[in-house]
Length: 216
Image (cartoon, rainbow, N blue to C red; front, side, top):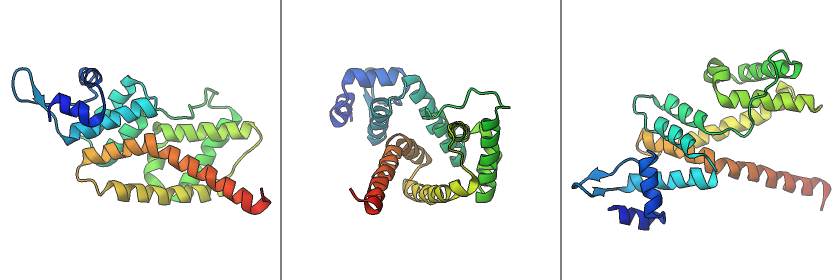
């Protein structure tokens, strides 16, 4: 399809598409002459992902560019490709600015290490604090501890086991896609768009369970 067709199919203006091309968010089309290029379904899929990241995820253009650079990095194995793309996304809980000898932070580090060991999550244990999700988890647990709501490993294990099952289901769905690039795009879209689905399902389930236990 030509650029005008891409705009028509996606609902994105020509000016916006040209901006995404200049910013490196959208790969260039296949050049067919000096002034025209041709685009295909992969451009349409990428354009929709970019729009979702920027409009729904409220992710800055520079961050989107970084995420997509990892998605497109064919030199990486799939685990590192997915990890690098997801690590580059903003995380809702920023790491604590407290010193490492803060008692709550120290306790949270110990708790997370024990939890991962109990789960047998070897890859996550090896990566540790390099993973922003690991740092965000430590920060959240430390904050809960300071507020007087400490958790222990037994408290967290049922949730972690549920997430383990969800992760397996995520990858089962991802593996249906034919190429590593499409799989990485799917993982990014899931992080931006599907995590709110999970959060709101949890809140609805809590409301339902509350109604069953306590009535309206």
